[in-house]
Amino acid sequence: MKLGDVVYSKKLHPRRVSGLVYKQQYGNYTGILYRPAILTIRKASRYYVCEDCFREIHKGTLHGSNFYTHLCLNCVTDEEPKPEFVPDH
Image (cartoon, rainbow, N blue to C red; front, side, top):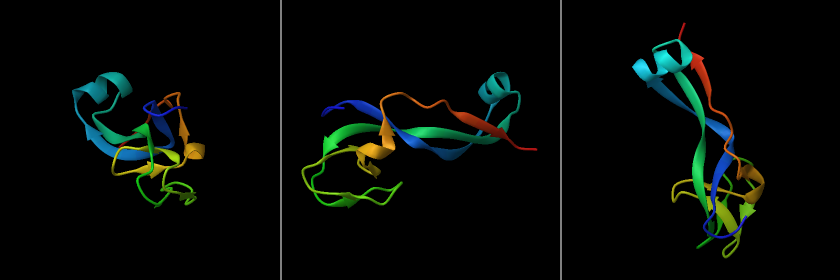
């Protein structure tokens, strides 16, 4: 991975969703959609801690970031993980 590449978190993050799109795609109007965070490889402007595995990210090292989330290179992948939908019962 190099500076500026788009990457995805390996960990899937939950988001409550509803609507006709989810009914058509998953067979239920409401549920929780687990998706990866979309990040960009950046140089750390300061010291951070990886939000998934709690490793140190030192200033100047490459990491995955979207300005709110900071993940070390062990917790990101360049292949987008498949989203998972859990319907409400």
